[in-house]
Amino acid sequence: MANIAVFGGTFNPFHIGHYQMLECVCGLDIIDRVLLMPDKIPPHKTCDFLADNADRIKMCELVCKDFYKAELCLIEFEREGKSYSADTIKLLKTKYPSDKFYIVIGGDMLATLDTWYKWQELIIDTAFIAFDRDGMDNFEHHIKRMQHLGAEIIAVDKKIISVSSTQLRENLNKNLLPEKVYNYIIKKGIYNE
View (cartoon, rainbow, N blue to C red):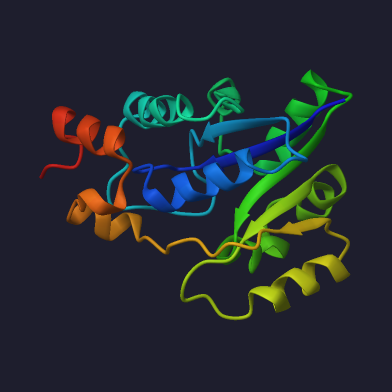
């Protein structure tokens, strides 16, 4: 039996906040593998500009090379429709029936977890690794609230830098992107107008 962390997201682009989360999760002794999983169709957000799937996948692939526990997982590209976590976890449990899954989640998403599609099933099927973000209020409150509703949550003791992907797309900041991701974005001209 392995403990597998599932780190999904739009990754549009994969920024330093994502990188810090991935680094922390890979550093947890309890976690054996980390599946870095770009969304095919993000269910929770609409955005001004969604980079091409191939580019978002490549950014994730580049970052995976920095961590021996991390691997790219494209399971959400193998099905139609929105990338709902509940459906993804069901697929993963079918593929790896003896393993335990942990969803990596930022505090902002934790605050709305009980509005997610099939969230009651999700908190039965998986546990969560939750990250506080700079500037977020009530992180502990949201953890306790979701635990009271039955969720198993590991709260990570490190605050993650808060980065706005929208602002980053509008004004690329080299300091807010992993270097190899920044270089890839510049080379491909992904977010140029």
